[in-house]
Image (tube, rainbow, N blue to C red; front, side):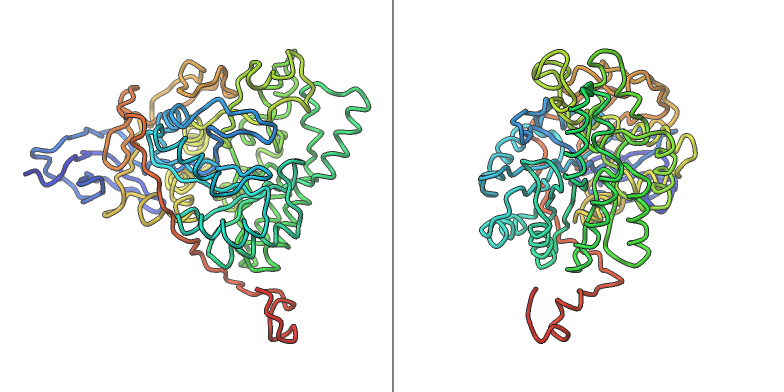
Length: 488
């Protein structure tokens, strides 16, 4: 009997900390050995000479088969979304399971189980979006979800149908702290946005390009600052998603310097696109409407610095695919006002090629930093590092083999999602995953899909386990200084 089921021979292995030449022996879906000259006698063999052998990507911010608050369904279901992710070098996705007003968390999770299990070709979990944090949700349903291994929850500080107020955010943060969960937040000041929208509309400024000024940078900065104060008040970890401003990133960096459990994420669109893309002819700018909106080149340069120094440790696509037709971006007609355009753009397949080409290729980041941003940091923050996120003996054999020199041009025909455009059309890319394995099974090879729908597994995630170096409740919450009241 062969010692291994499969051996990856002759590649350069990279983790978040090290780069070395080694063969990778895989047995039972897990990495069994890392060594030179492993015997592949009787085992399947993959020749990785001249290639990079990297951990499979973990995409932790994507909207797949999810209704918006307005009732618009994203164009990708769990089959097309997971296939597109796999071709982009990803082996695990963590989309959102969205609770809308009046829904129970139990019903939401059953809906998403029914969508994901029969379709996903790669492993998956969920983040729960909480828009209706009733006592039942906070005290019973979220703890039940946590026991299932869903250990991250998201709240919104904007959007009328999704927003939760500061008191409700504190309820979610306190519950998450008690159970060891991580709260994520879409941080924008709702009042500032509505104030801008009203004045733009009053002036007749309704074209897609006006989406950018309708979400001012100050709205994100204020909400990030407020979110930091709320999280620190109850000593709970908090992740700010899709950070798009230099000032917002600076606030996160300052909190981290104080030892607070504050984390940041950014996305390719904020580093590779600008608000000028919203000013394309006709309704073309609608393709680039996302929230927070695209900013400018100076902001891009600043965000790269915060990616390099580790402030923005999570790199996600925020894949929110709405087609450029009546089913998505043009639901209100061929010339929609910016307030009528579905917010979001596709990008799950381009998340890692863009970062590799423009990050590693242009020496903005190292290969090891690329691995951290593509997989390791996400595994650590979201409770998967016991199985995912690195190449080490005992972990799942989730591996992406990259050709670092392959040059290609982005076109929609190259993508595998259910979209009719890519916002990165025409970009020249160097480097691409050519073979992808999930739990030791080859799922993508030489441009062909090898995986069957429904083969992906739900990943039960561990509690958030990163300690605070500050670790102190506000004095008003401490029984020793609040006259003995037990608040948390």
